[in-house]
Image (cartoon, rainbow, N blue to C red; front, top):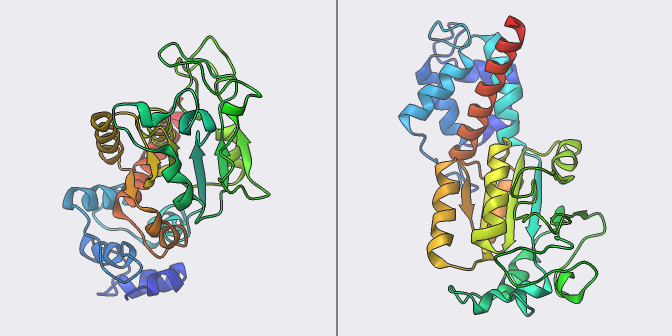
Length: 299
């Protein structure tokens, strides 16, 4: 069953893992599905925590009878397994702009002394689906930077942008700080990012850029809160403060996000490297959807 799960249809998958042929999947049989599902591109199995396995099983055991029947498995297949094996991914490249690299807010002069230009080469290894740049951004705690139509607001000249890349602008209100690509800091104004992601049916968001512990981190938190399977690309990001960078990483991991290097991205996007953290995150979102659906019916 090494990677055959990806190539099976729903009925074949159910039958293959229903080892005792009783027409139901026990939690032990469901665990075998998870062992086939969560593997890297070399076939190495990722372990699933026992409590996570039980919770995922219980989410799809909607009849609460201790087994998953074919009807319940159909939901599991369509809402969970298919997304885990065939994700729709968006790359979000944050603030790779002149002012953060060599301009008025060069992060190399901040506490971590990291060179923002170092993110460009690994980012350029992959096609860019989505990027954004703040225009007219003026924040109280930072020097004036990335002012609309200025050189500092331009994307770095060496950053490769594909023809169909989509620009998402934030920070257009000079009265409100705006770190995240989704919202301003006061949650007063949203950008077009959510609608763009919904239009494209995105399930997974890969985030990288500048600064790791400020705009990249804020965007990752909002992506997780919005229900997306979220991946930070570590070697494609640079930050301001080493302690805050580690806090950002811990926060993402605690929220069932994943931190990877650029060399791992291709296999994940193609569904050949499937992480249990992202599967668990998706299952929790499905659980919330079920709960909201029940509440709506009871109104």
